[in-house]
Image (cartoon, rainbow, N blue to C red; front, side, top):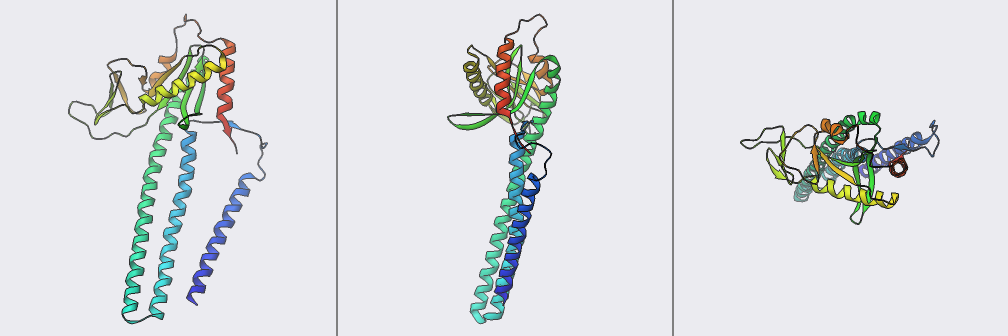
Length: 296
């Protein structure tokens, strides 16, 4: 009888989850006030937002598993205590208990890892929103701002966090949001030193983001040059929200705090335009088409 109870319980849970999922999907699509073909531009951190959404769903699956596992183990223990006796019962009890502890340990460890990863995703998403707010005033100066631009190369798909397009040129901005950690002697906790080649963080040196920013800018430059039919230089920028940048050398990638970007990309009033209105229109149309994929 206990196996019938367990089977009925699991069937009821499965039917409930399937029904709730179907209702959610139908409710997501039914009676929407927008036409089916409507697509919005990507906002800052759109890729990370989608990853976070998927991650939350996976967390719910792990939580459900952690909820069902004790029920399964309890049913198995009830079966053992009522159907077996002697040494066989003891072995079965120990085996069931070990399986329960191992299963709960595995699910707990995976859930904690998912939560930590979700925190990192949210940190990156928040950092991209910080940069987006710093770029927003540039729209009044004639710049077009695109966020989370989808791209692809031989290594696979990727995205460019922010692209600025204006008469002064095109800028590809990579955002890296990093937590503070322990610091070495002689280093300020909130400062990053850029010598043109590496980034010196309070805890050590690396090139985190520099190569990526340059590679993505070169990809965009090649793409836009083919589109326009004339060279379109794309300047790479690496920005690190929350940090003060100390520059002690120049390199192929400019390293800036978000608040420094607007001044860095705005040319003098008497500087000639580097892009013609026709080139600007073509570039804007290409980036708009790539970024307009957010549906209801």
